[in-house]
Amino acid sequence: MDRRIIDTTPKYLAIAAGFADLIRSGDLPAGTRLPPQRQLALERGVDLTTVTRAYTELKRMGLVEGRPGSGSFVRAAVAAAGGSSGFDLSMNVPPQPAGLGEGIAEGITRLLATPGGISPLTYQPAGGVLRDRAAAARWLGRRLGRLEKDRVIVAAGVQSALFALMDLLLGPGDSLACAALTYPGMKTIAAQRGLRLVGLAQDAEGLDPAAFEDLCRAAPPKALYLVPTIGNPTTATLPPARRQAIVATARRYGVALVEDDAYGALAEDSAPLAALAPEITWHLATLSKCATPALRIAYVAAPDPHAALRLAAGLRAVSLMASPLTAALATQWIDDGTLDALTAAIRAENQARQRLAATLLPVDAVTANPDGNHLWLTLPAGVGRTGFVAAAREAGLLVVASDAFDVTGAAPEAVRLSLGGVPDRAALRHALTLLADLLRRPAVATPAIV
Image: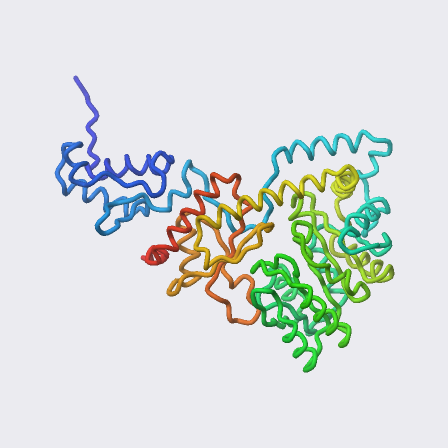
């Protein structure tokens, strides 16, 4: 008996499934125009109603959208083309320089092969061994001026250093001043420590010194936290006059300055606050933005050696110590020039990616620093940040709404885009093209609700 398998799948679903496979595989990229319905009906030998139902099904699946007068197009949902999970523009990481993995492996091998190379394989002091602190002092000293190694602490990343520092400087209920839009990690620490964050006005040049002066005149905070160079999230860099004004106010009212200089190594800018007022400034510099987060190494320049010892005691309770192996690798990279080469490569790639973004995104909506890893995107009138972030997620794009940074409860309609997490410029071009498409057609930036 001739037993044949009969395909009972409705024709419209078979057509839809065929297009869906092509879209999800990346063979039909975002923006591709599907054949006109009448043309496809003739080609497939089906009636027009069947094709219309197939296209409707593709729209229901979120893969296709209709544009009145133009036809049906593959939606931005193909950001997940090739079966990937999409494009992450949310994590503020530097682009990975070519050969970084091999460089880490070669560096560790070379490190362990040196006399005494086994020393980074055991416990070390909470603030780092003398050799690592001396190397950090030399590296920081390029921006801060002469710096004694006794003032320097090696920490397991900036987050642990900030937590230990907040524990050292402030108690529950104390006020910590910061920009109205600030680093989310500090918001998390403040919540954990029971601190009261006071958000200060800011503009295109960063935190407003007059707002800081007014706060100090009314009720001085224990400390002021700020990211003075390529601020996170707005990318603003404080000009010299503002830095001088902030330092003068802090001195006058006895306010400690906590300078998170995460991006200072990437940009040519004004002198750090710690160079202007070392006696009241805690300067933190991570290698996560100018080399790689994989090291988990940050350096802290304390106001004096005694203060450094107090912070080291706090770090011992928080993280015990920085990784001795990656701290030693960082020292080797400082000594042999590898860190400078990595920073230069990241800076150059950041500049190329920022130029690319400038060609694809509305120039009047973008605030950026050419050396930075991220940019700040103000949304068009009528486009809410919550809906836009959700629509971007549907399109396979992860971005961060302003709420993540907001301290005052007055978050603007804006998002932060981090350009370094996408693997290469071709992928970044695709991601930003999808994002620009959402911006041009605000109606699309409204997620479906069922």
